[in-house]
Image (cartoon, rainbow, N blue to C red; front, top):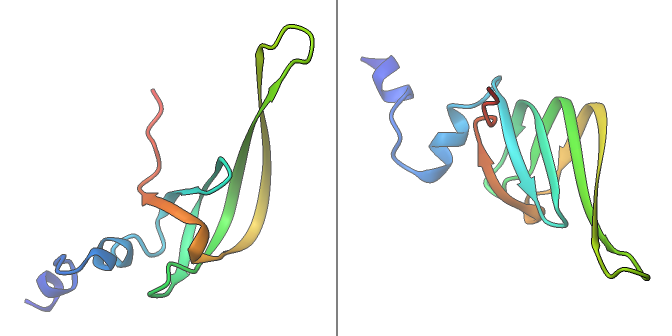
Amino acid sequence: MASEEESAVKEPLDLIRLSLDERIYVKLRSDRELRGKLHAYDQHLNMILGDVEEIVTTVEIDDETYEEIVRTTRRTVPFLFVRGDGVILVSPPLRTA
């Protein structure tokens, strides 16, 4: 009976609570994306992630042709503190085929 209460979703943050010690996907402001293991969080969505892959997407305009140039930069970080005011979306990681 207690395990049913622990896995019940009554508030939005309960979905994040169920993702503790699981890999999650976090979309941030400034076209940043994170994938990592959720170790801790609070009510402001400040999070501590481990084994993190960060993807930063930048769009530049070519001065001569006026074409958009999209660049992605990837890096890995062992532990990362994410400040909650930059969080746009939190979900299980996107599945790739």
